[in-house]
Length: 596
Image 1 (cartoon, one colour):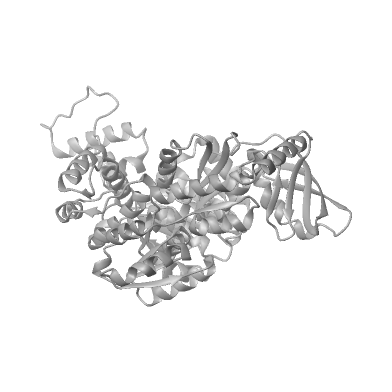
Image 2: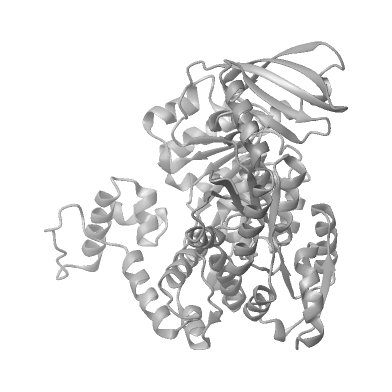
């Protein structure tokens, strides 16, 4: 074997595999390993993005490996899944308590078929060959009321999008070691060809223009792109059919505020056809983003939406029918709920399921708007309020002052913004479900459809299943193998008040998994975590002057007034935030302020 290091690109479809790859690489001094994390299409993007870096082989797993094989010309070694990997996941999923379906590519299902007869579980096995096939099978299982789904990454993602209970079967270190050994054996058989290819690539890299070559069917064959240029690949791929059979074609393409000057031609070599692109890039000055105003496309919204805690915990599925009804027209919507109930994700769900999801999603976060940005929003001709055809999500209108709320309402009505765009508002309500009084003005004036989100306390019976689903996800993210939460620890969680709902559950579960030392989360672990959480979330009634004390010998009305003044000072005079911190409505706050 050549003494030259073997350059391996490892694409881990889930984060916890990364730590196993790092640990195992220490056993192989002849390997130069680069580790990335990304599943499915993201894994393909990583492979294409790193294609130019002269790797010898790619290592990945399951459906991600299969998609990468179809997209680049480098050899791809697949990480297998062992019987122990499958048995461990069956244990975590409580397979003995109900029906279980395993949906995945053959690398998982073939192993399980040999185990099925000796396992004390009722298991249905479905082997797939494509993402579309997985979606069809999973949808049918959902319609049939299937209890639990075990799967690889490609079916795990699809199952979560469908709101199903899904458990990812992860690969152990022995499976990864076998893939390393196969990669070394593979590379040793063509070391001379690797050296020659490296030399020719260095010659081409000396040119000023970048070069990208695809096969006739669209597989990336060659690239001299740097990491910063890799975003152009999809744009070039879409141009393949526009390249003529003979001669060259020139393009000018704007992409991400850059100007690309492109030449393209078809090349025949050894009776195989390729499409080559050569281009230069100019970089005009870029303008910065407006603070508190963010533009996203559908892919960016999908990425955030499907990775959120609300999707993992299946907390949006019950609202799907409501969202579909709302999207039959583009009337304005206002979403109400306590802190942490998922108002932002519901807004994104409405956008993703709407007829205008190919237009931008514009989020305006009222908690971040400075006076300068507020003036830009209402008065500048480039304001998103002047656009048309977009979904505009105005988040946390309760954070605006009463004057700002009136200004915004007048601007939306006078400029007929709701006729030109889909407008969605969100407003924080208190524990009784009462929204900011001025939010009612938006509902009445703009005829908003109202969606009120339940708190976590409203359906605390679901906490057991929610915690197990999220525990599975945290095991994946943090390279843990926690099997469950003890019954007394779970009861302790159910008895907690959850003032910040799913955001708080996310934080507490992460802390529990980080601190866990065994296979189970115990009563003492939860007790300690909830004690710390109570200290974090308790509202401080001290002003910025820490020496100031509260005289409780006075009448209650005077004490209430001083407490309100202290909180207002701590919140820099923001009445909405002060009322929210005190757990009262702004109407009650105003009544206390004026009671002098």
